Length: 333
Ligand code: PMV
Image 1 (tube, helix red, strand yellow):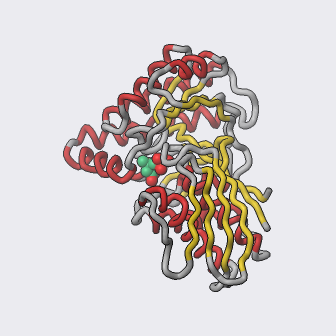
Image 2 (cartoon, protein in one colour):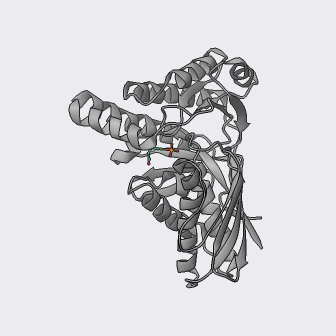
Image 3 (cartoon, helix red, strand yellow):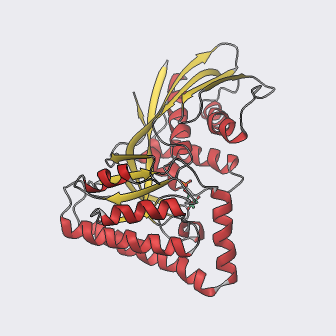
């Protein structure tokens, strides 16, 4: 039996614009998906996902696919991604007939901009390959996990989530160019409205606006400028060290700018905006939506308790938590 875990992430800057070749900076956060895998002798795959922030269920299936009555999104979350991960594992270990019992636990809200599916895929690949005696380095896990996301999401996936989850820390993604970057420990506060957005629809909406209006294309390009500015700021501050307030203030200002541009592109929502404003009024250095938008999570920077307390009283916010930068990406437990 082998267990691996992998972190979720927030976008410090750059979601949506990354789809058009601009850079983005996601940061791994200490909310993890943990996957335990045990090889089965009959070549079948059994997935147990009781704790995915969705109604618990167990599904057992072999070559004929899953036989269970559950919403497609729920099934996808627990089976299509895991199925894809196991296909990668069989390929990596040259073991086409390998079967597994897979148990997934996760404290990452599902489909809410925190990279839950990437974390599950990354942890599944690491756990199942080591169950077969194969050690993959995190970059290879990231590459294989990306292929899974690409496949499940019909060719619509950036490398950001999977690379960040596998490597940990802060990363910079620009097209196929993925690197880890130094970043200080940032005081992230995450607000979750209890919902999620439809990534495909939101991405398509931005694409249409961008084609229709030059100023929408300029807005996307401006997000790229915000990211480059933020990158310079991170490079100047000392990675790993406690960040000083001036840097937090400027990072927060850039986050606010980024949120405004995303709002203009139509990917925010009333609940996300309410949480963003509550965070700002409570003294956060900055706040923005994270991920595709439309609902889900915001991320704010605040070292004090102010934002956490204010969000806990905010009607639009169902859950609020602090999340440290996860320096470690995928790891065997
Ligand atoms: O909501 P998430 O965490 O899947 O992030 C989506 C980020 C987008 O830039 C909108 C799309 C992408 O694939 O990069």
